[in-house]
Every structure is written in C-alpha cells, then in structure tokens.
Length: 373
Image (tube, rainbow, N blue to C red; front, side, top):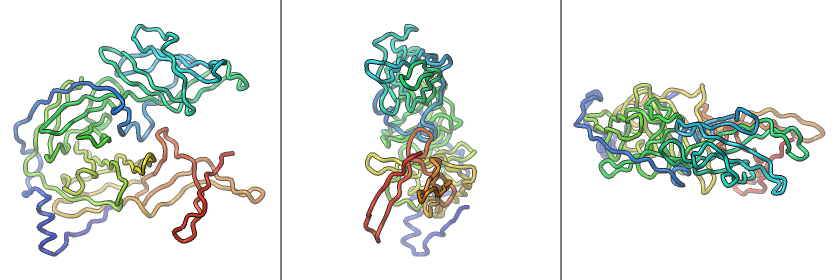
C-alpha cells in the first residue's frame, strides 16, 4: 500500500515544498474563465512513434479478419477493407488495405510484411487521411509447407493521428486511442501535453503547461475548452525510479489524470490514484509498466511528499522443469514489482524473451537469451 514521508523539518526544505504547492485548502472547482482551443487533425511519423496507453498496454486494438484472409478494420469509425496473401515468388506474406477509399484493394495497395509480420499503410477513411499500422499478425494456413490456403488472420493495429492545438504556449494533442471515431473523457482516449512523446488517459482534470485545468473536449475532436483551476491543494509525488522513466500515468475516479514525470515534482491534486501505465526507456529499448488487479490505490495527500511503492524489489513468476540436466522454462515468464505492477518488453501484449545474466560482482560474464522449445 502507500507510504508517505513527512516533509523535512528544516526551514529551507519547508520553503522549497511550499514554493511548489499552491496555497489554500479550498476544494477544486473555483475556476477562471475557460478558453476554447481549436484542434486540427494530424497524422504521420510523430504520431506513429508516440506512446499511448492502448499502444503500450495491448499493442493497439485487436482484430481478426472475418473471412480467413480478408475482412475489414475500423479506422476512426470507417470500415476499411484488408486482405492478406502469400507471394510465392517473394516467399513472403503481403497485406493490402483499401488506401484510396474506393472500396477495393488493388495490387499497388499491398505491402510486404516485415519479419514480425507488421506493415504500415496510408489510408483515406471518411474525410481524413490516416497512417495505419498492423503489427504482430498471426496467420493460420492449411499447408505449412508452402503457406497456401490462409484460414485466419489476427493481430493488433493503431491509427497514428491526433487532434492538435495550442494553449498558452503549450502544445496539446488528443488521441482517439480506442479507435471508435469519437473522443471521450473516460480514460479510453488519451492526451499529450508538449512534446514528451507520451500520452496519458484523457479525463477532465490535467496539467497544461504550469496550470492545473479542467478540460472539455468536443466528441469530434474539433476543439477543447480549457479552464484553469484556482486554489488547488497539491502533494509532491516521488518514486524509486531515478532515470529512464518516459511516462508514469496515474488516474483517480474523480476525473484527474497526471503524468508523474512532468507533474510529480511540482505536485498533483490530492486524491486517491491508481496506476494507469508507464514506460521505461534506455536507448532504443523500452519496458512497459502495466497495472494488475493487485496494484494498490495511492492516497496522495496535499502539502506532503508522497512516495509511491513501485519498482524494486522485483520478482519473477514462471514455470520450469528439469529434463536431462536441462532447465526448461515456460515462455510465459512474468516480472512484477513491489506493488505487483508488471514489466513487459514489447508492444504486442507479450513479455519478451527472458535472458540469463551471469555476473561476477559488477562485471557481466554472459548474457544468454533463452530458447523456446
């Protein structure tokens, strides 16, 4: 459960904390006038690279083609035809989508799938153009010798786009994270403030720039109204992570949603929060932090330094057996943290391939990836 460390007794420390908190214990709700911000839809590489809760937690929206090798994907509320085929000459799987919106999948609309059976398309759907990426496809065939007769295709996909506007110098971007063609503020869609590269669940209370604000977003993503809050009681939030934390989102049932990377040191409104998701990064490698049913609720108290129970010590859950002096480990290896949060190493809902790391003191002797089988 939560652990709370009291403020330092030294006068300098108290002054430092007070400087980061807004004075007053009035409940949130006293507001200045709101400002309407017009939003414009954008798609492209920046949106494709962005972290969102859906992308991090599930690898995007899951799908299964309805007729074996063909079917439709729902792209921002519009059904788009998709086909998967085996190319004998190239010895590779291809995927095609109706990219020009004419209802057909033509030869020039196919792309060769990567080694991970992923592909990217530029699709016209409705009145917008979208970057659509399908990833980690699972393709079933009748004859495995020549991959003939596709009987089923499933996987996940994302629509890389956001609704963008500017408020008081801060860039605000809203993602239709559940891909239903409408923006909602119940946490199923997401928002990014600034160029952090990571979005958090879109709710009704967020930090925008240096202000804590209430937000009202139009369902069609065309605009949002941002209203600064007055006299918000804040509590500073710390974690055990010292570096590498890209995003750590927490939410409460009162509509508050915050990224502790940007807001933890300056303080967030008091309340009872749950972990939404997080990302740890090191170079090009990423680790996803996922909540589980056993994760606690954190009571963030105003005027105090609140420390979240997250991270080390880590523990591993797996099944193993010994056969002829060989250790056989189940592919389902799971790593958990101090608050029962889970650490995963890919964007497809899996946990990645475990490694055996041999150390002598602080010196690494071997780093051996386990083999499945």
